Image (cartoon, rainbow, N blue to C red; front, side, top):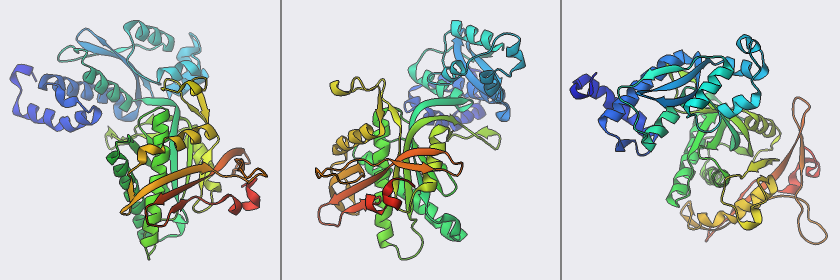
Length: 415
């Protein structure tokens, strides 16, 4: 299809792809028809290289009137990191750190970097000729980056994830399971809408855990992690209000966990195409799954983590803290609650929100923070904290989320 002689079917095909392009970048409509056609062509070429999920696309760089890409079988990434690749044994072992860096951050490399990576991995780069050369438009680059990620794997070193789990889900009838999952999905959407009304950024994604959902913020950084923590509060508050009004078993009773850690993001094959929504798996989801097994109905557990704050705008007091531990993170979250002022829940204006980690009262009258030792089904131990959230409203009763420290089994020293 030539640019100067676009057939009607060709125009329709480009238009049909427009929503996908607009999904990839918020300002994709700034591009002209030729640019959009160019990206549609690139998409079809990447899809062919992906080969129904057999391959993973690692990196790209612009070259002349096209782009260079690095393509490897999906299983080869693991082989590269442990030195079992036959091709690499003939040359040299590539460290796991090198591969991790390659699938982290931006996928665009310089030509020199592409040549070096191809040589180290003992693979040939592939050239995709485009209908016109790229013009280095920032939106165009952003869309290509997201296309490449859709056909590959992305490692995120520090991401906040929360897990909502429906208590007693397996004991429900199929109809009750369906209605309770729908109720939880509505609470997610309701909380999202409330935060957007207050101009609090949350670009949440979700993946099913079977009995609930893993939820994370697609945006990265300390502020994005804090916003996700507050998002969890609002979901639990919406659920609590719905529970108070429900007489049938249509609203779930929830327990929740929050943790920050590393994960891999990827797109599974759906039919003959990769999904547009992403999935995550990694240390953070493993820790959440182990914690939720030990959580009591209605409980909120927070993992013992280090949240990466590098690259964020910190105050002078925080500049030395490249990593924030869970306790410091919660202090930061409490101080950030002013942005939720004016929030309404069930028609009542919220006057104050208090989130804290529980513990025993000391002789001074203050409270310490109790560490909970959790033993999982594999006999491994991990540390977590019991969290409480109190939401106060103008005239309505406060919404009290989580469980009190005194209700923990054995005084809370272990679960």
